[in-house]
Length: 232
Ligand code: CA
Image 1 (tube, rainbow, N blue to C red):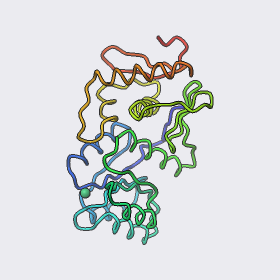
Image 2: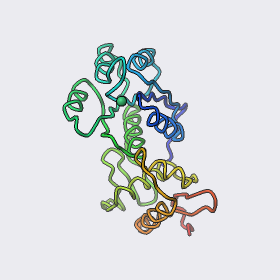
Image 3: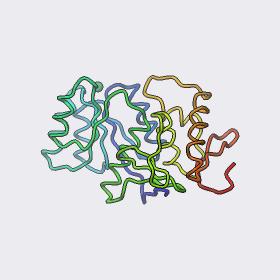
Image 4: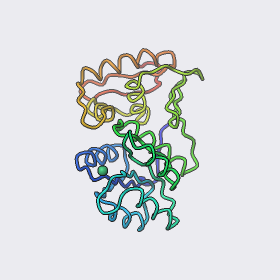
């Protein structure tokens, strides 16, 4: 199943940490979203109020206006833009308050870009009335609970293998470079070598064989996932 939108979905990243914001913006643009960035709460609220965004990814600790206040005012204006909160691991009360205020989902820092992409896609599809299942051959993948199935049976995957699978499934039939895989796999600030990627791909390839799903190595280009019967 390939996902095609008539026009790119518009995302707003609200994050004051410039390095993190930059990596989020680059990843979401690479995933095909028209992505804008706001580094403080006031700007974020102004941009969201103008409308046109399909999703906001909202950090909580922000200058000028904190994330919970942005969310409270947004919902006070009856703006239904879906919101994913970025929260710190030790701030459970913020998470609860955020969900009470009308956030749709949250991610705890540090998170992988693949996980953010999967959550974003699930929310965007929900907004479009779609279903959160990605399929290839006898493989199906539920993006909301992050579980893969082969012929309906749950498939055991490590969290790294899961991230590789998500990234490859979302770009099914297209070449995915090692660099793109590293970028989507790594939690912000983490390092990973191309050799490590080869190991995860190798393991995943073996696990996907029974589903008739192949991951081909394209010399110089990266990898391609499909269910072509002659995949080497
Ligand atoms: Ca922050």
